[in-house]
Image 1 (cartoon, one colour):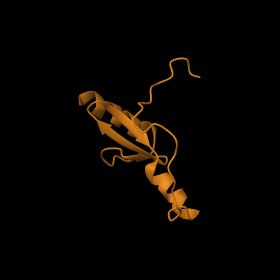
Image 2: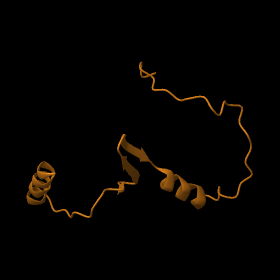
Image 3: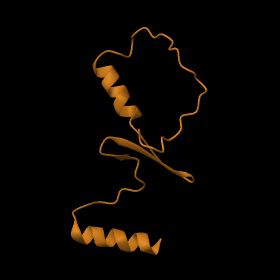
Image 4: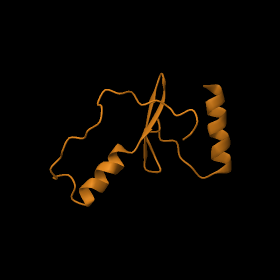
Length: 78
């Protein structure tokens, strides 16, 4: 906690900024901080884009894809 407070004080000295509590949105990204990590998504932004272009009331269809297949990180980056 002390280290965080010292870092915040240093940032205030170098930059014009404000402390508004826990970070939940940053540059259009939604951030969720949990015990097992920080999760980043753009759910709200995606919903706004769909609404803007009228895709909230379209007819949906099923896809031919496994719904329970886990998505794993590609270690080779391909």
